[in-house]
Length: 196
Ligand code: MN
Image 1 (cartoon, rainbow, N blue to C red):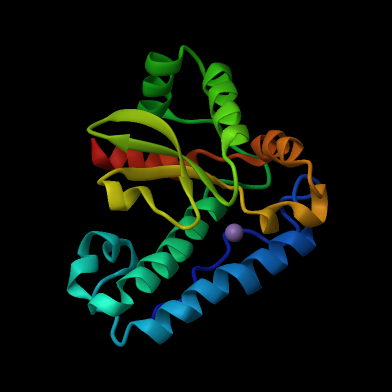
Image 2: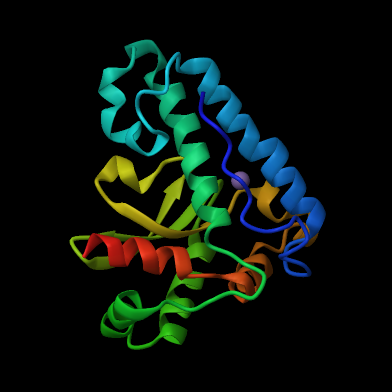
């Protein structure tokens, strides 16, 4: 059985930028549904969920699409919750150095990330990913994961309407800007550090 990850903070921790109600529904309904669906589709959990995308050919052909979609839903939400906190935190150490090398400074990186997120149409995510130490900001649709492209996801924003509609209605741009008040790069910095 795949277990739903524990939320790393209380439902109200992201207020006022993301409401308690949004976090509660997003985690307990949307995120949980992907995990429940994955458990219905996969009989045993010999592959940890993060290894499903790179081993999708080991699963029955007629189920691969649904398994990949729901595993992506679990992984992308895990990363999204780990990309925020009550107080937020900027990139640290090696990741900070790379951000400064590639984007001049954190503020400029943030501006580019926000612009990329605003460009995504439909449902999906904007990710910060790494490949051989370099960083890339990319958009992916629906529940696609960078892992399917051999890239390591470090940080993400969920741009599905359910992530912001209760709080921002159609003002996706304001959600993206306010998300950055809670953006926390501690997890991203740890993953990046562990790869180098
Ligand atoms: Mn979501």
